[in-house]
Length: 217
View 1 (cartoon, rainbow, N blue to C red):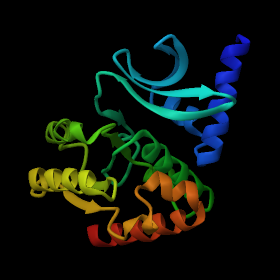
View 2: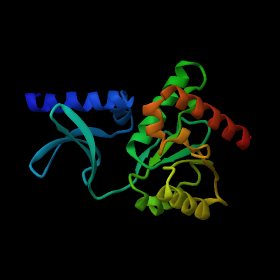
View 3: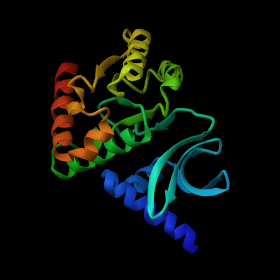
Protein backbone atom coordinates (compact mmCIF):
# COMPACT_ATOMS: atom_id res chain seq x y z
CA UNK A 1 0.00 0.00 0.00
CA UNK A 2 1.45 3.38 -1.01
CA UNK A 3 1.91 6.22 1.46
CA UNK A 4 -0.94 8.10 -0.24
CA UNK A 5 -3.28 5.12 -0.01
CA UNK A 6 -2.30 4.55 3.62
CA UNK A 7 -3.07 8.19 4.36
CA UNK A 8 -6.50 7.88 2.78
CA UNK A 9 -7.22 4.76 4.82
CA UNK A 10 -6.06 6.34 8.06
CA UNK A 11 -8.25 9.41 7.56
CA UNK A 12 -11.19 7.21 6.55
CA UNK A 13 -10.87 5.02 9.66
CA UNK A 14 -10.57 8.12 11.86
CA UNK A 15 -13.76 9.50 10.30
CA UNK A 16 -15.64 6.24 10.90
CA UNK A 17 -14.38 6.13 14.47
CA UNK A 18 -15.64 9.67 15.08
CA UNK A 19 -19.07 8.65 13.80
CA UNK A 20 -19.12 5.40 15.78
CA UNK A 21 -19.16 3.28 12.61
CA UNK A 22 -16.03 1.26 13.29
CA UNK A 23 -17.34 -1.99 11.81
CA UNK A 24 -18.16 -0.48 8.41
CA UNK A 25 -15.63 -2.49 6.38
CA UNK A 26 -16.61 -5.78 8.02
CA UNK A 27 -20.32 -5.12 7.47
CA UNK A 28 -19.83 -4.15 3.83
CA UNK A 29 -17.72 -7.24 3.09
CA UNK A 30 -20.28 -9.48 4.77
CA UNK A 31 -22.85 -8.36 2.21
CA UNK A 32 -20.54 -8.43 -0.80
CA UNK A 33 -19.68 -4.73 -1.05
CA UNK A 34 -16.18 -3.31 -1.15
CA UNK A 35 -14.10 -0.25 -0.29
CA UNK A 36 -11.66 0.94 -2.93
CA UNK A 37 -9.92 3.95 -4.42
CA UNK A 38 -11.56 6.08 -7.10
CA UNK A 39 -10.29 9.17 -8.87
CA UNK A 40 -12.66 12.12 -9.18
CA UNK A 41 -11.53 15.44 -10.66
CA UNK A 42 -7.93 14.21 -10.50
CA UNK A 43 -8.18 13.54 -6.75
CA UNK A 44 -7.99 10.11 -5.21
CA UNK A 45 -10.82 9.19 -2.86
CA UNK A 46 -11.95 6.13 -0.97
CA UNK A 47 -15.37 4.86 -2.00
CA UNK A 48 -17.95 2.30 -1.00
CA UNK A 49 -18.58 0.42 -4.24
CA UNK A 50 -22.16 -0.78 -4.43
CA UNK A 51 -21.59 -1.70 -8.08
CA UNK A 52 -19.25 -0.79 -10.94
CA UNK A 53 -21.60 2.08 -11.79
CA UNK A 54 -22.59 3.27 -8.32
CA UNK A 55 -20.41 4.28 -5.40
CA UNK A 56 -20.29 6.80 -2.61
CA UNK A 57 -16.97 8.44 -1.92
CA UNK A 58 -15.02 10.10 0.87
CA UNK A 59 -12.52 12.88 0.39
CA UNK A 60 -9.45 13.17 2.64
CA UNK A 61 -7.67 16.50 2.96
CA UNK A 62 -5.25 17.86 5.54
CA UNK A 63 -5.45 14.74 7.66
CA UNK A 64 -9.24 14.75 7.85
CA UNK A 65 -11.91 13.08 5.79
CA UNK A 66 -15.59 13.60 5.14
CA UNK A 67 -18.39 12.08 3.15
CA UNK A 68 -18.55 13.82 -0.22
CA UNK A 69 -21.35 12.25 -2.18
CA UNK A 70 -22.58 9.78 -4.76
CA UNK A 71 -20.87 9.17 -8.07
CA UNK A 72 -22.14 7.22 -11.02
CA UNK A 73 -25.73 6.07 -11.33
CA UNK A 74 -27.55 6.27 -8.00
CA UNK A 75 -29.39 3.09 -7.08
CA UNK A 76 -30.71 1.18 -4.10
CA UNK A 77 -28.37 -1.22 -2.29
CA UNK A 78 -29.67 -4.45 -0.76
CA UNK A 79 -28.06 -5.90 2.36
CA UNK A 80 -29.81 -9.26 2.09
CA UNK A 81 -29.97 -11.42 5.22
CA UNK A 82 -33.46 -12.79 4.54
CA UNK A 83 -32.34 -16.44 4.67
CA UNK A 84 -31.08 -16.04 8.23
CA UNK A 85 -33.62 -13.60 9.68
CA UNK A 86 -36.49 -15.15 11.64
CA UNK A 87 -38.64 -11.98 11.69
CA UNK A 88 -39.08 -11.55 7.89
CA UNK A 89 -38.39 -7.84 8.39
CA UNK A 90 -36.80 -5.38 5.97
CA UNK A 91 -35.45 -2.03 7.13
CA UNK A 92 -35.44 0.80 4.61
CA UNK A 93 -32.79 3.45 5.28
CA UNK A 94 -32.12 6.68 3.48
CA UNK A 95 -28.31 6.64 3.53
CA UNK A 96 -25.29 4.36 3.92
CA UNK A 97 -24.53 5.62 7.46
CA UNK A 98 -28.04 4.76 8.66
CA UNK A 99 -27.54 1.24 7.29
CA UNK A 100 -24.23 0.76 9.10
CA UNK A 101 -25.80 2.23 12.25
CA UNK A 102 -28.41 -0.53 12.25
CA UNK A 103 -25.80 -3.29 12.04
CA UNK A 104 -23.66 -1.58 14.70
CA UNK A 105 -26.52 -1.42 17.21
CA UNK A 106 -27.85 -4.93 16.56
CA UNK A 107 -24.31 -6.28 17.09
CA UNK A 108 -24.18 -4.62 20.51
CA UNK A 109 -27.60 -5.95 21.45
CA UNK A 110 -26.54 -9.49 20.50
CA UNK A 111 -23.47 -9.15 22.74
CA UNK A 112 -25.75 -8.01 25.58
CA UNK A 113 -28.14 -10.94 25.00
CA UNK A 114 -30.91 -8.49 24.08
CA UNK A 115 -31.11 -9.88 20.53
CA UNK A 116 -30.05 -12.99 18.65
CA UNK A 117 -28.36 -13.58 15.30
CA UNK A 118 -31.77 -14.61 13.97
CA UNK A 119 -32.97 -11.05 14.66
CA UNK A 120 -30.48 -9.56 12.20
CA UNK A 121 -32.62 -8.52 9.26
CA UNK A 122 -32.10 -7.23 5.75
CA UNK A 123 -31.68 -3.56 4.89
CA UNK A 124 -32.57 -1.71 1.71
CA UNK A 125 -30.55 1.50 1.46
CA UNK A 126 -32.20 4.09 -0.78
CA UNK A 127 -29.00 6.15 -1.16
CA UNK A 128 -31.37 8.91 -2.26
CA UNK A 129 -35.10 9.50 -1.80
CA UNK A 130 -35.24 9.73 -5.60
CA UNK A 131 -34.91 5.92 -5.52
CA UNK A 132 -38.11 5.44 -3.51
CA UNK A 133 -39.99 3.90 -6.43
CA UNK A 134 -37.14 1.41 -6.97
CA UNK A 135 -37.57 0.33 -3.35
CA UNK A 136 -41.30 -0.12 -3.87
CA UNK A 137 -40.75 -2.19 -7.00
CA UNK A 138 -38.17 -4.35 -5.20
CA UNK A 139 -40.64 -5.13 -2.42
CA UNK A 140 -43.44 -5.90 -4.85
CA UNK A 141 -41.17 -8.44 -6.54
CA UNK A 142 -40.01 -9.96 -3.25
CA UNK A 143 -43.19 -10.23 -1.19
CA UNK A 144 -42.40 -13.80 -0.19
CA UNK A 145 -39.19 -12.69 1.55
CA UNK A 146 -40.66 -10.09 3.87
CA UNK A 147 -43.66 -9.49 6.09
CA UNK A 148 -42.65 -6.35 7.97
CA UNK A 149 -41.09 -3.11 6.72
CA UNK A 150 -39.44 -0.69 9.13
CA UNK A 151 -38.76 2.82 7.80
CA UNK A 152 -35.57 4.55 8.96
CA UNK A 153 -35.99 7.66 6.83
CA UNK A 154 -34.84 11.18 7.70
CA UNK A 155 -37.08 13.25 9.92
CA UNK A 156 -37.51 15.99 7.31
CA UNK A 157 -39.82 16.88 4.44
CA UNK A 158 -38.11 14.63 1.88
CA UNK A 159 -38.06 11.69 4.30
CA UNK A 160 -41.73 12.20 5.20
CA UNK A 161 -42.65 12.35 1.52
CA UNK A 162 -40.79 9.12 0.74
CA UNK A 163 -42.44 7.47 3.74
CA UNK A 164 -45.90 8.43 2.49
CA UNK A 165 -45.12 7.06 -0.98
CA UNK A 166 -44.04 3.72 0.48
CA UNK A 167 -47.01 3.44 2.80
CA UNK A 168 -49.50 4.40 0.07
CA UNK A 169 -48.06 1.80 -2.31
CA UNK A 170 -47.51 -1.09 0.10
CA UNK A 171 -49.84 -0.69 3.11
CA UNK A 172 -52.04 -3.59 2.02
CA UNK A 173 -49.10 -5.96 1.40
CA UNK A 174 -46.79 -5.44 4.40
CA UNK A 175 -46.98 -4.32 7.99
CA UNK A 176 -45.19 -0.95 7.80
CA UNK A 177 -43.78 0.84 10.86
CA UNK A 178 -42.19 4.29 11.10
CA UNK A 179 -39.01 3.96 13.17
CA UNK A 180 -38.66 7.77 13.33
CA UNK A 181 -41.98 8.02 15.19
CA UNK A 182 -40.30 9.45 18.29
CA UNK A 183 -38.18 11.84 16.24
CA UNK A 184 -34.72 10.26 16.63
CA UNK A 185 -34.24 12.08 19.93
CA UNK A 186 -34.31 15.45 18.13
CA UNK A 187 -31.65 14.51 15.56
CA UNK A 188 -32.28 14.47 11.81
CA UNK A 189 -31.64 10.76 11.24
CA UNK A 190 -30.58 7.51 12.87
CA UNK A 191 -26.89 7.90 12.05
CA UNK A 192 -26.62 11.36 13.61
CA UNK A 193 -28.47 10.16 16.72
CA UNK A 194 -26.05 7.20 16.99
CA UNK A 195 -23.02 9.46 16.48
CA UNK A 196 -24.05 11.99 19.12
CA UNK A 197 -25.37 9.63 21.82
CA UNK A 198 -25.00 5.93 21.06
CA UNK A 199 -26.30 4.81 24.46
CA UNK A 200 -29.51 6.83 24.06
CA UNK A 201 -29.87 5.54 20.49
CA UNK A 202 -29.41 1.94 21.61
CA UNK A 203 -32.19 2.42 24.16
CA UNK A 204 -34.34 4.18 21.54
CA UNK A 205 -33.82 1.29 19.13
CA UNK A 206 -34.55 -1.36 21.73
CA UNK A 207 -37.73 0.43 22.88
CA UNK A 208 -39.11 1.05 19.41
CA UNK A 209 -38.19 -2.36 18.02
CA UNK A 210 -39.79 -4.02 21.05
CA UNK A 211 -42.93 -1.96 20.48
CA UNK A 212 -42.94 -2.91 16.81
CA UNK A 213 -42.52 -6.61 17.61
CA UNK A 214 -45.33 -6.44 20.17
CA UNK A 215 -47.58 -4.77 17.60
CA UNK A 216 -46.70 -7.43 15.02
CA UNK A 217 -47.68 -10.18 17.45
